[in-house]
Length: 377
Image (tube, rainbow, N blue to C red; front, side, top):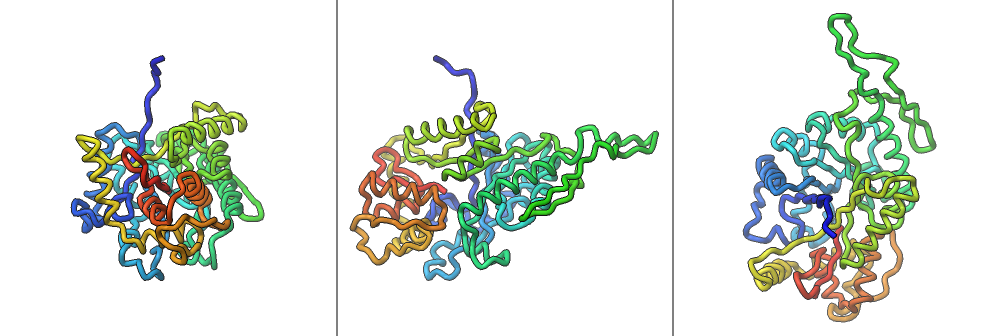
């Protein structure tokens, strides 16, 4: 049966590419990482190709600075702040949605509500917030914390945080600002709504000092694929980003998220699922395979081991032989969806550590035989 709905697509923009070794590829313009014209070029290419969303990930730290292999991953030392970059891209694009990641782990929700409402106005109704929690200890230390919050605490905070932000976005009725010069009436105070939110973790009076945005509220995305992440997305998000390693896994995730959305009293069709892929494109299958093999060959083994260390929350793989099996992994405070995926891949495909480090580094699968099944963040 022919479907009459449309596929929705998002592109994850990275200045030097998503692959951990892509910055080493000779086609990547490394010197343009902070060049707004380059970012605009990428966004306009996606817009012309009918993508719905240009999406920015983020990390609020110079990660890996204490690692001896940091010089091999220097591309991760430069992150333009997403709200600033998206505000710059807004007048340089016309239709594509502009979605930025912003963590609920550190700053106060009033700031986030104000920033995304402002972006929605600046972009004429194209703003979206990707709600994330933060597990990076380097990032935590930049905000006065000794270490990142525990996984369960992060999601509990995120749920409350999102509730506050969405409440602030509704601070004003759509017709609260008549801008009536003749009668000297700028606004209707009775159409203003102070939030007056108080809890153990937050105290936010409101209202937001900006009119209702063009969309009513910016679009909300969520990117966690752990149990709590799916719950949060199904309950609150307009769209969920996920990375799955097979068609059957993707279908199962889709069913689970839709069922949970319905259990929360939502219409399942109102929740969009964006399942991530990293395509290697060629005129033939062999050409695509050659591109994949080449970029994989650029990964330094020490970098792969370090990525596995980070994915598992500090498990030292260097103590084991590279061509031996992946050992049993202990629980940790790492990003649980990625840790669970690594464990599943290691057991199901009987990966060696060498294969696992390439999988973790690439975070994708090979074009046809999946010799390097991967982990997408």
